Amino acid sequence: MSDNCIFCKIISGSIPSEKVHETQNIVVFKDINPVSPVHLLIVPKKHIPSINDLSGEDAHLMGDVFRVARELGTTIEELEKNYRVIISTGPDAGQVVPHIHFHLIGGRKLTWPPG
Image (tube, rainbow, N blue to C red; front, side, top):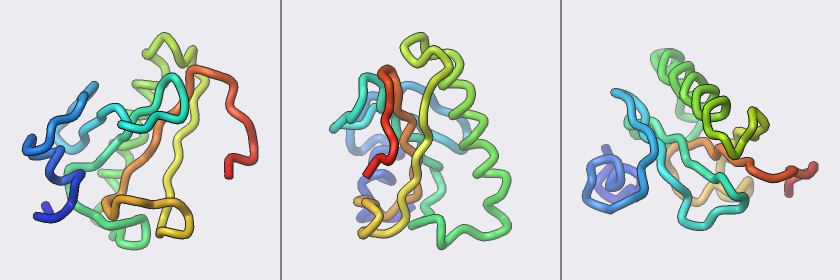
């Protein structure tokens, strides 16, 4: 945990959020600025600043992230098994919070390219 990380504060419960799913290693909550009808953030509880900071020890944790994404993507009715998982790395790519996280979006037809 990082003392100045907003996601670490959400994970610890010191900042409220609308959590929709939680496991031993992952927390999922609604994005406060959604870009689609369903916009969730899948966040590992371990503080890792970005994908560039992943180590071999984190492989199982990243597997957990995608298992949770699949579970939510196939059980949330609004998604109808159609969803996008997005990760941004660095400020020029749109990463605002320096804690690795994955956006699960859907609930409408998504276009490409996204940005």
